[in-house]
Image (tube, rainbow, N blue to C red; front, side, top):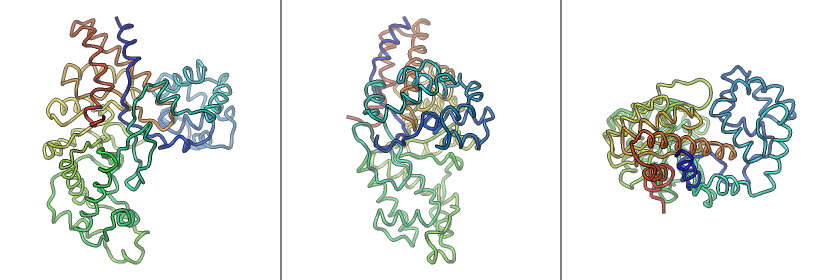
Length: 422
């Protein structure tokens, strides 16, 4: 039975809810396969296993051959090869480049095959032919992006981080230039934010918040007066003299008010807000900052906003599941999840299917910078979804027809509806 369900899941077209890929294939950096694979995720596991930071920099650089780089990372790769991060890349090496296992004896052949990918339409091959992805939602990376992207492959999620927490005078100058608003009063800042959100809306109806890397996701209710006082702290003595060089430390009341102001605009316009929760990529952070339960108050205050909550909230997936059960406007997104921990993704999906409506789950987002990793991730995601659904059929919860219907919902129908895609 699992074979039949897997065969069906394998053929499904995917709407990919989150990526970090270059906006155009021509922007792919020409490097070797080790530098490419260490741009994202796997490097964190290698460091966790003990790889010195200096050796990681050498492996990412262009001063060594792939054989010399393998001498630096090989032992750490062996310690990590069973993690989701490594498995996704080994699947990619096998199916894209014909290399069964990544090791000392195969790294040269893998690199040779990888170099040939720059002489073909690699995005089409990986995203369309191999992964069967209809469209991917790509992160704009920053609030000041020009919003240009290859629409054959992507739609844009526009970051709002720098609106709610400008890091310095340069951010305000960028906002002024993009909106035509001169900012000297709090009212000016609100007007500029409103115009920028309007510009985002013309591009796509998706906003992205990832401030959990730097601070708590708790944004309490504050008064306008408190926020305005926080704004005026940015305009301390000398601000206008060396404006661009000024660095800001934003008052929490200011950031809370601005986020809530933007959510009010999103509610009026019917926009979707994607929010990073759970594990922060990299090595070392304050994990509690990203607990999705910190968002509880926002969910109460903005019932008209569609919240797409990322990364299954891992390791707070129980909290996210409860929030999805409580709030009709809160949706669970499994982007990144299947490679954070494949087994945790299976357990979580199994639990969620019996906790809240399956129409609230987005089953896949590659969340990768190297495009080959997207293929490996979707392969693992399809296997996970097929296994969980087959187990439910075996347990008698539903039949195989329902399993296929749910699989299609997770990978295609749900994100299509949530993001209002044609």
